[in-house]
Length: 305
Image 1 (cartoon, one colour):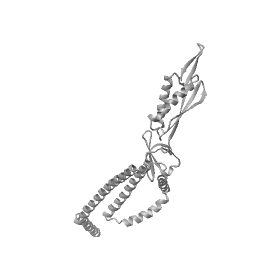
Image 2 (cartoon, one colour):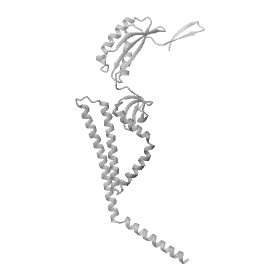
Image 3 (tube, one colour):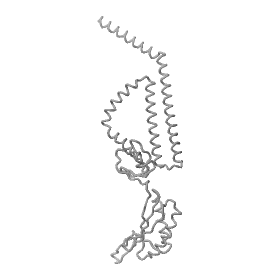
Image 4 (cartoon, helix red, strand yellow):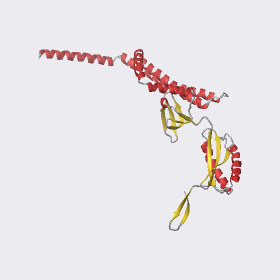
């Protein structure tokens, strides 16, 4: 019993000394000086890095804006692509430097962390082959100018406008407003609709008894006036003539070429105005019909489909 009492007394004294030392450390002036100085350094580093990123991105944007306004012919889509990439790289570099500065301000040995990170990075690298593939593919997409920001593309099951091209992923905005984020390493085939001029064909059905020669003259005269009214047309649309005769109707075809991605707007206008032009001149256009047979009355009933 006396031995147990002595052991408990020693333990109490030991705990008391530890508690006293801990209290002295917590209330020491040196600790609070360290906390104050470290907090100020961390706040300054974070604020400086945020300002550096914002200012740097604005400077890069201004530089590229001046380049695009210069007399030298720079590809706007390529400039926008490189602009986004440089802004992202700047953010990564500044924030990585800020993290290193914060660790240094907290008296954490960076050299040891970097050595450990290098060993861990080597181990992770063997399992990060897809990440390396994404980065390499992203580099070649930008270097070869396969597509750029603002281009309308079809890629890996997604179709829409390119919002951003990074070294790892590409962001595409779909027609319904959805956003696709595609790893660059999975990009194999790309359809870019924004590089070359767009061509389209318009087929219109006329009645089998329609005056084709008169229709050709009217349509040709109408098409010759279009380039002055629609600057997006690169040349005068061409009336090719009769393409098919079937089911009591004649199919005539018009072809045209526009600036990239302007074909749908012009095609709708041509269809509507040619239809009105033909109707106003007594040339009937055809529409799908369906014949119904009335067994009771023993006659055919013509109806629209």
